[in-house]
Length: 355
Image (cartoon, rainbow, N blue to C red; front, top):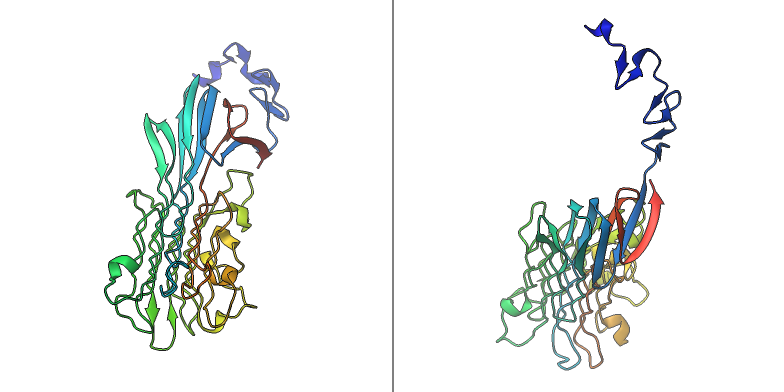
């Protein structure tokens, strides 16, 4: 009977003063750890290939971001190429796993793709019950082509973690306009990224498409005519515990398509990938400006987003004798975090924070 219970594990139940040696009147500590309402984490950020070396294992949270896809081909070697699409953002995946004592885990960080090239895959090898945990690289943007012999298979964005945006085929015509590449190349659930956008023209203006992002498909904002904006990236706070809209916390945004219409003056850099203002804001690249409004290669070329966020590169103008091509995608990243006292490990750039 309950009334007969006098002790629990030898401690009088009527006057328990301590639990595991800690005073129960204000419970300042539990099992020897401070109980203040916050949790201290240690994070390990890998911006290049490396090794996560575990001495004492336990539960870890991981973020894996593939390299962003490059903007489509639109180079000075063929100045009659049409504008190209923006690159897709690298795939973004998170998971929670148990790492083993005295075990090393190989980290691979995907590079951003060059112009017309897909981003590289990122992974933590053998962490998922012996299997690799991966995020696909972003798909390259579709090339700009003017010759009638070229087809939508050339101007279409590549598939990837997020798909690349479609490039242009012919002047002021919707014939063979590039379609967006498919996202979620790894077939994951939840998805690692979304589709790129469709290039379009209305007989007067034209716009290539942005690449898809890890947080959404490219948006078709071609009115007036503007450019196709890249899909948004996703926020993640594993590196520092913060959850804001700062550039450094948004991963896998899609690169912007080429900029036409009212947004196409040198003084207006307000359009970029990830549906956010500013060249590399939101981690992805701005598209190049139209040739008859800007006469410098740096503005007519796409730009690369911030390193280690996996953003896609911007598409280029292409109708220029200087270097005005699609930009490279940004490199990916791998971040591992855990409650500071729960795991003993080393590798990458380490930091601690409380949330």
